[in-house]
Length: 424
Image (cartoon, rainbow, N blue to C red; front, side):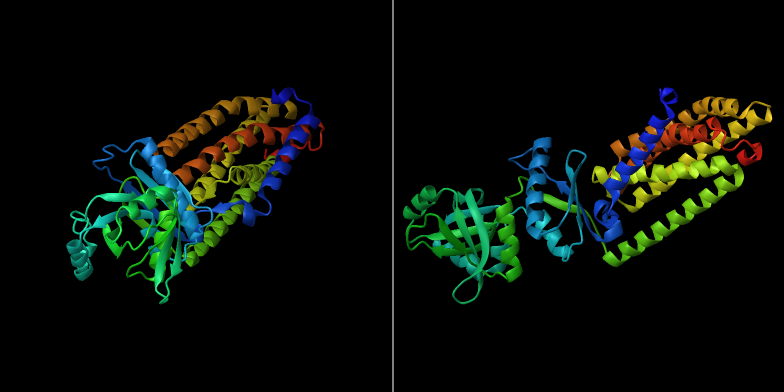
């Protein structure tokens, strides 16, 4: 189909593709997203655990956890986080440019389940007196009475200060009538507040509380901000633990980015010089096609807002090697046809046609391997597989169609007829 198109249509397609890619790429600083290994940040792999209430981690449970994590991360002010389900019971969270990695990890793994209970006097006294008892999730929680109101029914929570300038948490309820009925029925009783089954504080209900209340306790400023954020985001439906936690400094990421870019440019330069030195004019055309190829791959990354990682750059460079290899196969076949005495036009047509099978087979095997790696891999492995997959696809397109177009323009118009210009 490509060979039947008129030359001006082919040229328009190539120029249009290059122009579209440039539009998607520029300005490159804001269009190409960088992974944690290139800009610094935190990568956390979370393990989801079953419970008596949720005996199996289903895709729905995974989705609920993702939603809660997304809401919590939004509260942290992190831009462009990446949350990815891994298998059936894990979630990978990537947070770029995090100022306080430890606090971020803590917010991710805390369940943040808030319970209100009517507590007996003796339990309040023990919980207040004995800090170990109070911090034991199975201590005060076990004999402190039934849950009379859940944090899931809160409308919102905010960090604030009380009259003595101590940090506290103000909250609003979704069901003021229900909360008012509960407090009205328990006047002069202790209302205990538990977060993740840990005793926070307790106060005597002096009057009916409907739409607003407060949570006090031995909080720091960071505590009330974190807890408010968690309560606003909602409670995780299941408990989670951190099984992998990698923190990458911004300086290290910047250094890796600079080194990888320098290495890529050096590789591209050496490959370009080799192609021009060995294959002369066809090599020069292949270099131009290679530039279009680079624009196409960067345009794809910018267009779909993919994240470019260090392994992704490795897959990018490897796919460049595939593009060069395809041109080498085609040009060697072209030289063989010229040596056999065929005309320049016939050599180009036959060379591309006969080299196509080898080029196609080598690219398809790589595409299949990269596709399987992307489907089964996790984390940065996916970044490598993604760029390798699409880089190889674009390599096949540029070698078979774009390089062929450049060759046809020169040969069909008799712009260069000396066989020495073709490396013969």
